[in-house]
Image 1 (cartoon, rainbow, N blue to C red):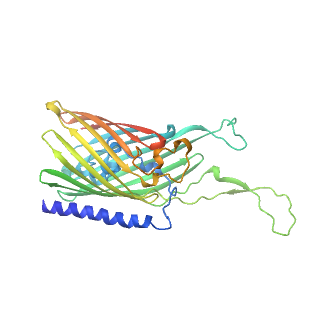
Image 2 (spheres, helix red, strand yellow):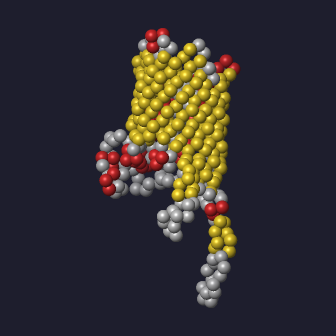
Length: 377
């Protein structure tokens, strides 16, 4: 127990030591944060309704199939194979889908898994200066996808680590890009008295940037005659524009989860996290989950969840949004970052099935809904 207590204090001090320099940097006269400077931001949309309801703080608690996304180290804590699919209704009628399957082996000491995430929309009318009404009938679509393979291993009864390798494709209209990235995760799990405590350190989307290419970059270029020469009309010469490389949305996360209350058939878990992305300001979050397990010996498990994620870059004091400039721009507590949800599961023998739901508020952009279904065997 002494080691667990020392680790907890160390984790808190580490999070503070990381947060203080970041905060001090933000207080300077120059803001070097790369707002809008990354591509493939669909990689941050999460996986499963349970994770969405608990925010990023779920990385420390994840020990089911959704660990494929939140923390690959948590995959090695699964007791049996499982699969999960989830559907996420995002803003502006876009849709995000995530699915995964995981398989522990070697007596539970190791686990492997595969996952897929896809975001986008299709058949949107093309409007141009020459065709402002879209009479031409031309359409475009956006489809961003990744496929990942994960390996996780328990190195002791308290520590596990995992890695995910993913291939990313980003199709925007008539241009597309492909790239490679990895996720790295660790999980420390111990007890303080009868209370389980878990800590997670993860890095997501670590890899080279994406450079888009495609037929939309084919252009006819007319060279300007040298200064002082006769301006003779010229025919356009075929050329291909070259795009810049855009970094992936790299995210470093420190999370802690503690079972604050444990009874024979229920528990209450408190979660917290600190995040440091490469394309926006540092953030933090708190989550709470109540779970009643095998209620009355019926095989049913129910859960209620909620979280609040602090997004400092969402303070829009310097932006005039007209009628949208309500208390969302005051910098005070708003619904932006609030998420709630719940779920129900039924287990019989070695089989179990679960259904979860989550609602997440995006402030002026409205709310989003996520449904997920999981199966274990």
